[in-house]
Length: 271
Image (cartoon, one colour):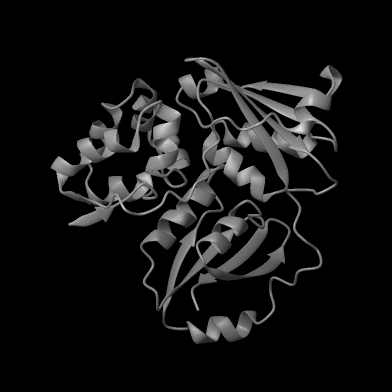
């Protein structure tokens, strides 16, 4: 029996019991998007029960009531890790920003068509100038995206206009290029030593032919089932800079070897 709490990721629920999908969808109409396999990859891996309840306008207990009959054991004592944003004050950048500094991106039609808007958002983020604000127009608060870009140095603020309209603002506060690797970091240091350590204990995947954001999600899914004594060897086209903070948060170590333009290899493991 799997024990779950407010911090349990939606992806873990779905892996343990496939029936959890329809149970979650029955909680709120906003969760119907999880039926789309692409969006499920995007949302489920980064979204906890606590985060999902906020997105769906329901409570953590609503999840527990639906999931307990499916064989999940409920832990109500664990403290929620995510910071709640209710009554969050309006940040200074929202008070001082001028209209000419706001770049709008409406992703509602993209999501409704069953596609993943992350690659569109990433491209827009790449073009964002210092002091500018990216305004994402959506039908729900993109909590995982706020979390992801927050690690990259962006401030964010979300306002709910109505049940079907949520505006989320991302402020680039410095000259941090969130999509360029840190040139001062030697990601390849110790590559040969680590490769030799896991010589006969490698799991290999090739994500070079996948379109964004599938490489990142494919790697995270592989890591979710990776034995602790093994390393994941990844063939990639580029350094996956959005993945690196996720690896660090999940306490994975990694090494990166740039073979040529358009060819990168990664070793991901736990010490």
